[in-house]
Length: 124
Image 1 (cartoon, rainbow, N blue to C red):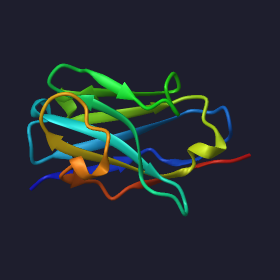
Image 2 (image 1 turned 90 degrees about the horizontal axis):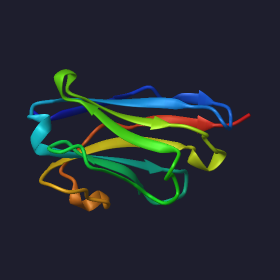
Image 3 (image 1 turned 60 degrees about the vertical axis):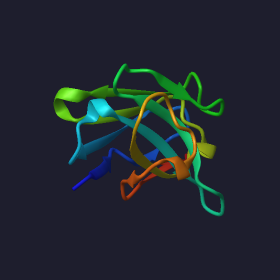
């Protein structure tokens, strides 16, 4: 069955970096779009970045543009979210999600499969 498992979260100081990984199984990565979302305490889940694995097209939301980048390694069935120059407002639970299709999808309701989420805390 389809599974997504995130790893790489943790505590980091402001200005630091983390790389989140999303290990996928149960489907062919090339046919799917992977989205990254986050949810801060007391706030709604919001889109962060997405990658179309058929052609490598990526999109990042304005709040993280220039700091966060999605990438993929189809041979390992892995998708990554590189997060640089982290800010306290980046704190939250980060999840990867998958759906079939092309382009990038920016809203949680557009995705069919979800990982369990992983905590990222940016604090000094």
